[in-house]
Length: 105
Length: 119
Image (cartoon, rainbow over all chains, first blue to last red):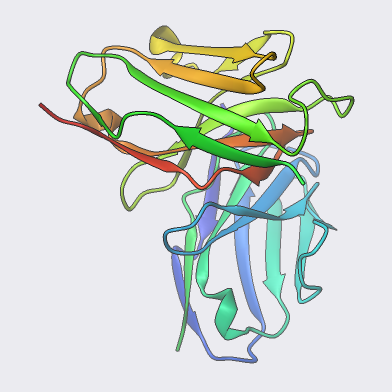
């Protein structure tokens, strides 16, 4: 089975910072990766699909990149409303990464 | 727009069967978009675990780690799909979400329902 490893597990950053979260697959998954945002007490929200395609309605400060085994989610300028836990998810067995908790420094 | 809403008991006794329903509104579960309908759970303070999917035709795909205890069914006349998880233990205590699967991405989610397994 393909395993997903996210890093870091937690991250503190300041408003306006550029933030990058990574997700590594245990084998080549092409661009078959999605990213989600989950705010406390809420359901997850799809941000990025197919590694780099922005879901409709998601702010353009979010972007995704990578292919093969290494992927990134980048927030170009962190906003207070971006405080959440972020998950990657790959296609083969719909497995999620363990999450990255992002808060404001 | 399509919305999903989970319903079912919030408390289930150990060894019994957990039963939840997800009602789809704002659109038909029989869709030309080729969507699957899914269940996902989240243990308290933990990450997300995919449980299984169903197509409107009844085709199912289950997480191998839960497969022996899961049944997912669909009722197109009621525009809803359901989850049954048998022989539950405290380890099945979680928030259960239903979601729409669009080409391997969960693009619409219900709000989630907390299920506690306890006597």
